Length: 334
Ligand SMILES: Nc1ncnc2c1ncn2[C@@H]1O[C@H](COP(=O)(O)OP(=O)(O)OP(=O)(O)O)[C@@H](O)[C@H]1O
Image (cartoon, rainbow, N blue to C red; front, side, top):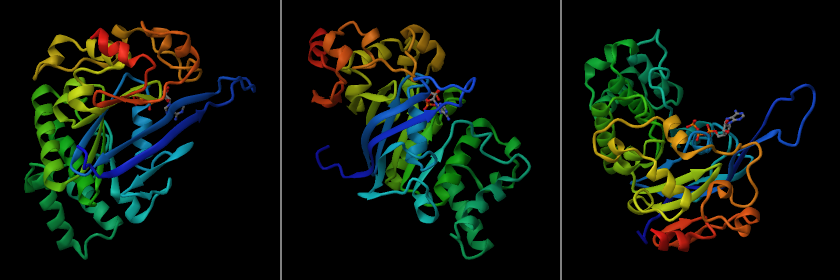
Protein backbone atom coordinates (compact mmCIF):
# COMPACT_ATOMS: atom_id res chain seq x y z
CA UNK A 1 0.00 0.00 0.00
CA UNK A 2 3.02 2.30 0.19
CA UNK A 3 2.84 3.27 -3.49
CA UNK A 4 -0.80 4.41 -3.33
CA UNK A 5 -1.15 7.62 -5.33
CA UNK A 6 -4.07 9.67 -4.00
CA UNK A 7 -6.55 10.56 -6.73
CA UNK A 8 -9.22 12.25 -4.62
CA UNK A 9 -8.18 14.09 -1.47
CA UNK A 10 -10.45 15.63 1.15
CA UNK A 11 -8.48 18.09 3.24
CA UNK A 12 -9.81 19.38 6.57
CA UNK A 13 -13.41 19.43 5.36
CA UNK A 14 -15.86 21.14 7.65
CA UNK A 15 -19.56 21.83 7.13
CA UNK A 16 -21.75 23.70 9.54
CA UNK A 17 -25.42 24.43 8.92
CA UNK A 18 -27.02 27.49 10.43
CA UNK A 19 -30.49 26.64 11.65
CA UNK A 20 -33.32 29.06 10.86
CA UNK A 21 -34.13 31.65 13.50
CA UNK A 22 -36.78 30.47 15.89
CA UNK A 23 -38.99 32.99 17.74
CA UNK A 24 -36.76 35.73 16.34
CA UNK A 25 -33.94 34.69 18.64
CA UNK A 26 -30.68 32.90 18.07
CA UNK A 27 -29.25 30.79 20.80
CA UNK A 28 -25.70 29.61 21.16
CA UNK A 29 -26.65 26.28 19.65
CA UNK A 30 -27.83 27.52 16.29
CA UNK A 31 -25.20 25.76 14.21
CA UNK A 32 -25.19 22.08 13.29
CA UNK A 33 -21.61 20.78 13.26
CA UNK A 34 -22.34 18.21 10.55
CA UNK A 35 -18.70 17.66 9.51
CA UNK A 36 -15.63 18.71 11.53
CA UNK A 37 -12.12 18.53 10.09
CA UNK A 38 -12.43 15.43 7.91
CA UNK A 39 -9.38 14.44 5.84
CA UNK A 40 -8.77 11.34 3.73
CA UNK A 41 -7.72 10.27 0.27
CA UNK A 42 -8.73 7.62 -2.22
CA UNK A 43 -6.51 6.16 -4.93
CA UNK A 44 -7.56 5.15 -8.44
CA UNK A 45 -8.77 1.54 -8.42
CA UNK A 46 -9.62 1.72 -4.73
CA UNK A 47 -12.87 1.63 -2.78
CA UNK A 48 -13.13 3.59 0.47
CA UNK A 49 -16.17 2.84 2.62
CA UNK A 50 -17.37 5.47 5.09
CA UNK A 51 -19.50 3.92 7.81
CA UNK A 52 -21.22 5.29 10.89
CA UNK A 53 -24.59 5.83 12.51
CA UNK A 54 -27.33 8.03 11.12
CA UNK A 55 -26.48 11.73 11.39
CA UNK A 56 -22.70 11.33 11.74
CA UNK A 57 -22.11 13.39 8.59
CA UNK A 58 -21.60 10.75 5.88
CA UNK A 59 -23.99 12.24 3.31
CA UNK A 60 -22.71 15.74 3.93
CA UNK A 61 -19.16 14.55 3.16
CA UNK A 62 -20.49 12.88 -0.01
CA UNK A 63 -22.17 16.08 -1.16
CA UNK A 64 -19.03 18.15 -0.56
CA UNK A 65 -16.91 15.65 -2.53
CA UNK A 66 -19.30 15.99 -5.47
CA UNK A 67 -19.42 19.80 -5.30
CA UNK A 68 -23.09 19.86 -4.25
CA UNK A 69 -22.51 21.39 -0.82
CA UNK A 70 -20.02 24.16 -0.21
CA UNK A 71 -17.58 23.36 2.60
CA UNK A 72 -17.53 25.80 5.50
CA UNK A 73 -13.78 25.15 5.40
CA UNK A 74 -11.41 22.73 3.70
CA UNK A 75 -10.88 21.57 0.15
CA UNK A 76 -11.46 18.71 -2.25
CA UNK A 77 -8.61 17.92 -4.64
CA UNK A 78 -8.40 15.69 -7.67
CA UNK A 79 -4.90 14.64 -8.74
CA UNK A 80 -3.48 17.40 -6.56
CA UNK A 81 -5.69 20.11 -8.09
CA UNK A 82 -8.21 21.86 -5.89
CA UNK A 83 -11.74 21.52 -7.28
CA UNK A 84 -13.98 24.57 -7.00
CA UNK A 85 -16.83 24.35 -4.50
CA UNK A 86 -19.27 25.29 -7.30
CA UNK A 87 -18.43 23.17 -10.29
CA UNK A 88 -19.32 23.33 -13.93
CA UNK A 89 -18.23 21.74 -17.19
CA UNK A 90 -15.57 19.07 -16.85
CA UNK A 91 -15.09 19.64 -13.11
CA UNK A 92 -18.72 18.69 -12.60
CA UNK A 93 -18.30 15.42 -14.49
CA UNK A 94 -15.15 14.21 -12.74
CA UNK A 95 -16.77 13.35 -9.40
CA UNK A 96 -20.22 11.79 -9.77
CA UNK A 97 -22.58 11.31 -6.83
CA UNK A 98 -25.17 8.54 -6.95
CA UNK A 99 -27.76 8.99 -4.23
CA UNK A 100 -29.73 6.45 -2.28
CA UNK A 101 -33.07 6.08 -4.04
CA UNK A 102 -32.61 5.00 -7.67
CA UNK A 103 -36.34 5.32 -8.42
CA UNK A 104 -36.34 8.99 -7.43
CA UNK A 105 -33.30 9.60 -9.64
CA UNK A 106 -35.31 9.25 -12.87
CA UNK A 107 -38.07 11.42 -14.27
CA UNK A 108 -40.98 9.00 -14.26
CA UNK A 109 -42.54 10.60 -17.34
CA UNK A 110 -39.48 10.18 -19.57
CA UNK A 111 -38.02 6.97 -20.89
CA UNK A 112 -34.66 5.50 -19.92
CA UNK A 113 -33.17 6.36 -23.34
CA UNK A 114 -33.90 10.04 -22.72
CA UNK A 115 -32.38 9.82 -19.22
CA UNK A 116 -29.16 8.45 -20.67
CA UNK A 117 -28.94 10.71 -23.73
CA UNK A 118 -29.59 13.83 -21.65
CA UNK A 119 -26.24 14.09 -19.76
CA UNK A 120 -24.37 13.46 -23.03
CA UNK A 121 -26.32 16.31 -24.61
CA UNK A 122 -25.87 18.66 -21.63
CA UNK A 123 -22.12 18.10 -21.47
CA UNK A 124 -21.66 18.04 -25.26
CA UNK A 125 -20.06 14.60 -25.12
CA UNK A 126 -21.38 13.20 -28.40
CA UNK A 127 -21.41 14.70 -31.90
CA UNK A 128 -24.92 13.55 -32.77
CA UNK A 129 -27.78 11.23 -31.87
CA UNK A 130 -26.06 8.16 -33.35
CA UNK A 131 -23.03 8.77 -31.16
CA UNK A 132 -25.25 9.30 -28.09
CA UNK A 133 -27.01 6.01 -28.76
CA UNK A 134 -23.69 4.19 -29.21
CA UNK A 135 -22.35 5.53 -25.90
CA UNK A 136 -25.63 4.78 -24.08
CA UNK A 137 -25.63 1.18 -25.35
CA UNK A 138 -21.99 0.66 -24.46
CA UNK A 139 -22.63 1.89 -20.93
CA UNK A 140 -25.80 -0.10 -20.22
CA UNK A 141 -23.95 -3.23 -21.32
CA UNK A 142 -21.05 -2.33 -19.03
CA UNK A 143 -23.40 -2.42 -16.03
CA UNK A 144 -24.85 -5.75 -17.10
CA UNK A 145 -28.07 -4.51 -18.71
CA UNK A 146 -29.09 -4.93 -22.33
CA UNK A 147 -30.17 -2.76 -25.24
CA UNK A 148 -33.88 -3.34 -24.64
CA UNK A 149 -33.64 -1.65 -21.21
CA UNK A 150 -33.17 1.64 -23.07
CA UNK A 151 -36.71 1.34 -24.48
CA UNK A 152 -38.32 1.06 -21.06
CA UNK A 153 -39.86 3.56 -18.67
CA UNK A 154 -38.33 3.83 -15.17
CA UNK A 155 -41.42 2.16 -13.65
CA UNK A 156 -40.79 -0.93 -15.81
CA UNK A 157 -37.37 -1.57 -14.27
CA UNK A 158 -36.85 -3.60 -11.09
CA UNK A 159 -35.01 -2.09 -8.12
CA UNK A 160 -31.80 -3.88 -9.11
CA UNK A 161 -32.07 -2.76 -12.75
CA UNK A 162 -32.64 0.82 -11.64
CA UNK A 163 -29.66 0.67 -9.29
CA UNK A 164 -27.50 -0.41 -12.23
CA UNK A 165 -29.07 2.19 -14.53
CA UNK A 166 -28.21 5.09 -12.18
CA UNK A 167 -24.64 3.83 -12.18
CA UNK A 168 -24.72 3.72 -16.00
CA UNK A 169 -25.94 7.29 -16.12
CA UNK A 170 -23.15 8.43 -13.78
CA UNK A 171 -20.53 6.53 -15.80
CA UNK A 172 -21.66 8.01 -19.13
CA UNK A 173 -20.04 11.37 -18.42
CA UNK A 174 -16.60 9.86 -17.80
CA UNK A 175 -16.03 10.38 -14.06
CA UNK A 176 -12.78 9.44 -12.35
CA UNK A 177 -14.48 9.21 -8.96
CA UNK A 178 -17.85 7.72 -8.01
CA UNK A 179 -19.41 8.68 -4.69
CA UNK A 180 -22.20 6.28 -3.79
CA UNK A 181 -24.55 7.18 -0.95
CA UNK A 182 -26.12 3.97 0.41
CA UNK A 183 -25.97 2.14 -2.96
CA UNK A 184 -27.59 -1.05 -1.68
CA UNK A 185 -29.87 0.19 1.12
CA UNK A 186 -33.15 -0.32 -0.74
CA UNK A 187 -32.25 -3.68 -2.34
CA UNK A 188 -32.89 -7.25 -1.26
CA UNK A 189 -29.98 -9.56 -0.45
CA UNK A 190 -29.49 -11.22 -3.85
CA UNK A 191 -29.64 -7.89 -5.69
CA UNK A 192 -27.19 -6.38 -3.19
CA UNK A 193 -24.71 -9.12 -4.14
CA UNK A 194 -25.10 -8.27 -7.85
CA UNK A 195 -24.47 -4.58 -7.20
CA UNK A 196 -21.45 -5.35 -5.00
CA UNK A 197 -19.93 -7.51 -7.76
CA UNK A 198 -20.65 -4.84 -10.35
CA UNK A 199 -18.92 -2.15 -8.28
CA UNK A 200 -15.86 -4.34 -7.77
CA UNK A 201 -15.72 -4.96 -11.52
CA UNK A 202 -16.09 -1.24 -12.36
CA UNK A 203 -13.32 -0.40 -9.90
CA UNK A 204 -10.99 -2.85 -11.65
CA UNK A 205 -12.02 -2.30 -15.28
CA UNK A 206 -12.18 1.50 -15.19
CA UNK A 207 -9.64 2.22 -12.44
CA UNK A 208 -12.23 4.35 -10.67
CA UNK A 209 -11.77 5.72 -7.19
CA UNK A 210 -15.01 4.87 -5.38
CA UNK A 211 -16.30 6.26 -2.10
CA UNK A 212 -19.16 4.22 -0.65
CA UNK A 213 -21.24 5.73 2.13
CA UNK A 214 -23.08 3.00 3.96
CA UNK A 215 -24.47 1.99 7.32
CA UNK A 216 -24.34 -1.65 6.20
CA UNK A 217 -21.12 -2.98 7.70
CA UNK A 218 -21.45 -6.24 5.81
CA UNK A 219 -21.60 -4.41 2.46
CA UNK A 220 -18.60 -2.29 3.45
CA UNK A 221 -16.66 -5.44 4.30
CA UNK A 222 -17.40 -6.99 0.93
CA UNK A 223 -16.56 -3.87 -1.04
CA UNK A 224 -13.93 -1.79 0.63
CA UNK A 225 -10.16 -1.73 0.29
CA UNK A 226 -10.04 1.00 2.93
CA UNK A 227 -12.61 2.15 5.45
CA UNK A 228 -13.36 5.11 7.69
CA UNK A 229 -15.62 5.10 10.74
CA UNK A 230 -17.27 8.46 11.42
CA UNK A 231 -18.69 9.68 14.69
CA UNK A 232 -20.42 13.05 15.17
CA UNK A 233 -18.81 14.71 12.16
CA UNK A 234 -15.28 13.36 12.63
CA UNK A 235 -13.32 10.33 11.51
CA UNK A 236 -12.71 8.06 14.50
CA UNK A 237 -10.58 5.54 12.61
CA UNK A 238 -9.39 5.12 9.02
CA UNK A 239 -7.19 2.52 7.38
CA UNK A 240 -7.19 -0.84 5.62
CA UNK A 241 -10.71 -2.29 5.59
CA UNK A 242 -9.31 -5.63 6.74
CA UNK A 243 -8.30 -3.85 9.93
CA UNK A 244 -10.91 -1.13 10.48
CA UNK A 245 -13.95 -3.29 9.68
CA UNK A 246 -12.75 -6.36 11.57
CA UNK A 247 -10.38 -5.45 14.41
CA UNK A 248 -10.57 -1.67 14.91
CA UNK A 249 -8.76 0.07 17.75
CA UNK A 250 -11.09 3.02 18.38
CA UNK A 251 -13.57 2.22 21.20
CA UNK A 252 -16.45 3.65 19.14
CA UNK A 253 -15.56 1.60 16.05
CA UNK A 254 -15.36 -1.49 18.23
CA UNK A 255 -18.78 -0.81 19.71
CA UNK A 256 -20.28 -0.11 16.28
CA UNK A 257 -18.99 -3.39 14.88
CA UNK A 258 -20.00 -5.32 17.99
CA UNK A 259 -23.56 -4.06 17.45
CA UNK A 260 -23.78 -5.68 14.01
CA UNK A 261 -26.18 -8.61 14.45
CA UNK A 262 -25.26 -12.17 13.53
CA UNK A 263 -27.03 -12.31 10.14
CA UNK A 264 -25.08 -9.23 9.04
CA UNK A 265 -21.83 -10.94 9.89
CA UNK A 266 -22.60 -13.67 7.39
CA UNK A 267 -22.51 -13.32 3.64
CA UNK A 268 -26.16 -13.22 2.74
CA UNK A 269 -28.17 -12.00 5.71
CA UNK A 270 -30.37 -8.93 5.58
CA UNK A 271 -28.82 -5.67 6.69
CA UNK A 272 -29.91 -4.19 9.95
CA UNK A 273 -31.59 -0.81 9.85
CA UNK A 274 -29.61 2.22 10.91
CA UNK A 275 -32.15 2.93 13.63
CA UNK A 276 -31.76 -0.55 15.05
CA UNK A 277 -27.98 -0.14 15.19
CA UNK A 278 -28.33 3.25 16.86
CA UNK A 279 -30.72 1.77 19.40
CA UNK A 280 -28.18 -0.87 20.33
CA UNK A 281 -25.47 1.74 20.78
CA UNK A 282 -27.35 4.23 22.90
CA UNK A 283 -28.01 7.87 22.17
CA UNK A 284 -25.70 9.98 20.03
CA UNK A 285 -25.21 13.52 21.41
CA UNK A 286 -26.57 16.40 19.34
CA UNK A 287 -24.50 17.74 16.45
CA UNK A 288 -25.75 21.20 17.46
CA UNK A 289 -23.77 21.08 20.69
CA UNK A 290 -21.21 18.28 20.32
CA UNK A 291 -19.40 17.38 23.55
CA UNK A 292 -16.04 19.14 24.06
CA UNK A 293 -12.81 17.17 23.74
CA UNK A 294 -13.42 13.77 22.20
CA UNK A 295 -17.07 13.83 21.08
CA UNK A 296 -17.37 10.16 22.05
CA UNK A 297 -16.24 10.64 25.66
CA UNK A 298 -19.75 10.63 27.27
CA UNK A 299 -20.28 7.09 25.95
CA UNK A 300 -16.74 5.78 26.14
CA UNK A 301 -15.68 3.25 28.81
CA UNK A 302 -12.05 4.45 28.57
CA UNK A 303 -12.76 8.19 28.96
CA UNK A 304 -10.50 10.24 31.22
CA UNK A 305 -10.19 13.94 32.00
CA UNK A 306 -8.01 14.43 28.89
CA UNK A 307 -10.84 13.05 26.71
CA UNK A 308 -13.25 15.60 28.16
CA UNK A 309 -11.11 18.55 27.14
CA UNK A 310 -8.71 17.64 24.30
CA UNK A 311 -9.80 16.70 20.78
CA UNK A 312 -7.69 13.61 19.96
CA UNK A 313 -5.28 14.00 17.03
CA UNK A 314 -5.37 10.95 14.72
CA UNK A 315 -2.37 8.66 15.28
CA UNK A 316 -1.06 5.79 13.19
CA UNK A 317 -1.48 2.60 15.13
CA UNK A 318 -1.37 -0.99 13.83
CA UNK A 319 -2.27 -0.11 10.26
CA UNK A 320 -4.92 2.53 10.89
CA UNK A 321 -5.13 6.15 11.93
CA UNK A 322 -7.02 6.31 15.18
CA UNK A 323 -8.38 9.48 16.82
CA UNK A 324 -8.34 8.31 20.43
CA UNK A 325 -6.21 9.28 23.43
CA UNK A 326 -6.36 5.70 24.68
CA UNK A 327 -6.16 3.70 21.46
CA UNK A 328 -3.20 1.65 22.75
CA UNK A 329 -5.20 0.60 25.82
CA UNK A 330 -8.11 -0.33 23.59
CA UNK A 331 -5.72 -2.43 21.50
CA UNK A 332 -4.39 -4.22 24.59
CA UNK A 333 -7.92 -4.82 25.88
CA UNK A 334 -8.91 -6.65 22.67
N1 LIG B 1 -29.38 21.10 5.23
C1 LIG B 1 -29.20 20.85 6.52
N2 LIG B 1 -29.56 21.76 7.47
C2 LIG B 1 -29.36 21.54 8.78
N3 LIG B 1 -28.80 20.40 9.27
C3 LIG B 1 -28.43 19.47 8.38
C4 LIG B 1 -28.61 19.64 6.97
N4 LIG B 1 -28.12 18.52 6.35
C5 LIG B 1 -27.68 17.70 7.32
N5 LIG B 1 -27.87 18.27 8.54
C6 LIG B 1 -27.49 17.70 9.84
O1 LIG B 1 -26.11 17.37 9.76
C7 LIG B 1 -25.82 16.19 10.46
C8 LIG B 1 -25.18 15.18 9.51
O2 LIG B 1 -26.17 14.79 8.55
P1 LIG B 1 -25.84 13.74 7.38
O3 LIG B 1 -27.10 13.58 6.56
O4 LIG B 1 -24.62 14.16 6.67
O5 LIG B 1 -25.55 12.42 8.21
P2 LIG B 1 -25.54 10.90 7.71
O6 LIG B 1 -24.47 10.23 8.48
O7 LIG B 1 -25.48 10.86 6.23
O8 LIG B 1 -26.95 10.39 8.21
P3 LIG B 1 -28.05 9.54 7.43
O9 LIG B 1 -27.43 8.20 7.22
O10 LIG B 1 -29.20 9.53 8.35
O11 LIG B 1 -28.29 10.30 6.14
C9 LIG B 1 -27.14 15.72 11.07
O12 LIG B 1 -27.22 16.21 12.39
C10 LIG B 1 -28.17 16.38 10.17
O13 LIG B 1 -29.37 16.58 10.88
